[in-house]
Amino acid sequence: MTILWDNEPGASDRYHFALGHVQLLGSAPLVHRALDDDAQSDLVVIGPMVNLDEASLLVESVRGVRPEVGFILLRHRLDVTTMTQALRSGFREVVASDDAPALSDAVRRSRDLTARLAGHQSGGPAAQGRIITVFSAKGGVGKTTLSTNIATHLALSNQRTVLVDLDLSFGDVGISMQLMPSNSVHDAVSMSGSLDGEGLAQLVTHHEASGLDVIAAPTDPSLADRVSAQVVSELLRVAAAHYDYVIVDTPPSFTEHVLAACDVSSLLVLIATLDIPAVKNLKLALETLDALGSPKESRVIVLNRADVKVGLRDEDVVQAIGAPIAVSIPASITVPASVNRGVPLVLESPRDPVSVALREIADKHIRGRFGTPVEDTQRRSLFSRRSR
Image (tube, rainbow, N blue to C red; front, top):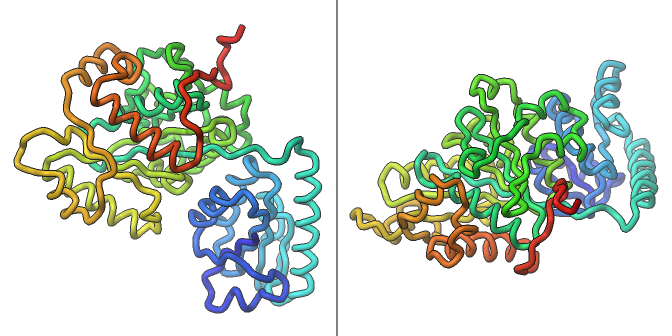
């Protein structure tokens, strides 16, 4: 399938001679998502009016993960500066937008190169893991507890899983799992543009009891500003190339890092509790995601502490947000106790009602959605040394 990124009216018809049937998209996040959803997409043509810097960022973020995908840039006028920047970013060719035969030849050459690259990969391209971002627009709703427990359960269930703490200023995934990370998300900055599996392994802290890998937030809040959205996108995409699941814990606001994670995510898990501020913020978050073009079908809404008697009911939340609740998690004093002990509840008390609800999210709404089998056997992490 060929993807055409172009906002001009009639673009599909204009380039039909050279491209044939295309998937017409209007933004870099939509192109990212289309490439994630369809491993057969192997060519992206970018229209002449698309900003070159935005187009270059797209190519740079994709080529390290899917080098077989070809990018062709169209311009109304060809000049040395444009061609130099485009080729340095990873475009295979730059073609005049009004030269249909040249575009047709460029498409043929790109597809030939893609076929040769595929031939050098034993068994074909590796399956791409799924990025799951856990978000709430309000703090204190149990987001980190949910992230750590879902990730732990996936790791215990034969899935290579990494948990990324994207709350770069005040993240506490590490301390909540009794980990002492020597590296963090910030260390990916120095590898920007060249991050690979070996570099990724240097960022990981291993949780021995579950087999889960964790990429922690920086211990110094001032380092958060040094991590760009581009670094976050690259980190998550490289992680997805080496793990079955990448679980992303986030701060309670739409920072540039959160938006970058949402752009590359296959699924968003959105959390609220039975209080008016949390419901109001969830509604605003849903409206924001709608405005950003996030598909409604790739969201799972979770109501935490759903049985607390505070004058609101599940039905009130559904009516207020205009969307169904996928899973309701009961309140339990075992949750703060497990957090204080630094042991995920699904590991410490698997039969607890809260653990059952958390496993439902992981098994039904994550693994079930993406077709991975539910097994009880453990699997070692990709970067684990426990096999020694």
